[in-house]
Length: 305
Image (cartoon, rainbow, N blue to C red; front, side, top):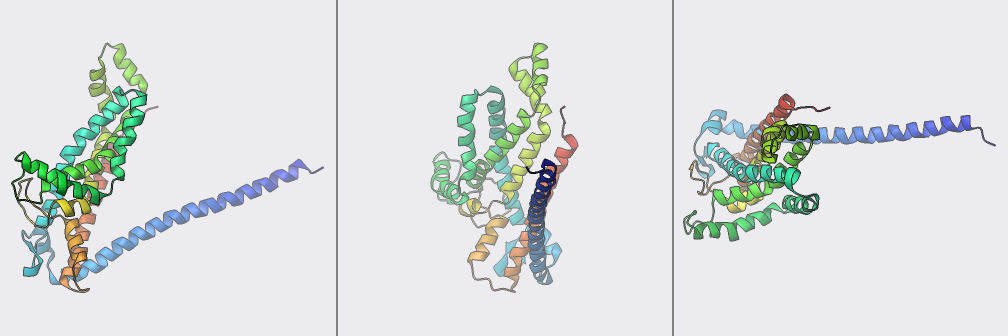
């Protein structure tokens, strides 16, 4: 008969080796992600410096004309286009997403929730280029028929913003619902015990308690909207403009990058370096938005026991 006391240390040693291998693999995965991020940032700033040898940072950041063929490199029209698309998308996604989250978490029966939630999240799986074609072939003509967009205008920032809003809708809805469902049931029961109605409990108790998570989901959704590429390339157009009209054709930072990559910009030219310069600006913008979301969560997060 084998000694149980000798078998136990053997099993412990095998378990320890397996744990060490797993820890090594996890550490390697974390290190790879860090190295990839550092590599991307280094490439952006390394290639972007060549552009700023020919164009001053002041002209780039504060110039109001973006005409590469004429040597005008003011990035404000591209930045304005990206922000305008994100704002329109926010007006579409935030009310619908938060409203859907409140309904699914507080009002919808469990059977209905199991059906509606996957259907809603299917929007996140749609290729963005499909949404872009939907905007060009269906949404823009529909808005022209009702008089919102002028006839004969094939591209519109409004159409692009609406489809980007549909794209980020599942993100806003899912994260908001998780924040709402994390609110303890005891808060709801206490409000009901005081005679509050269900709408009052939702709007005066549950939503304020989950507000940090809801706001963070909205900010992250806007960050996703700023970086959207194919949908806005197809639907918004390629006209850099500071026109505040939401229906006007605009060009975003991402659509400009696509335009140059599809062209014949030679490596080492100012136009080639411009895609890295606007890439740096886009990286800084999305990084700042994400940091705002993290700060909101950390500052206003409520921990329930």
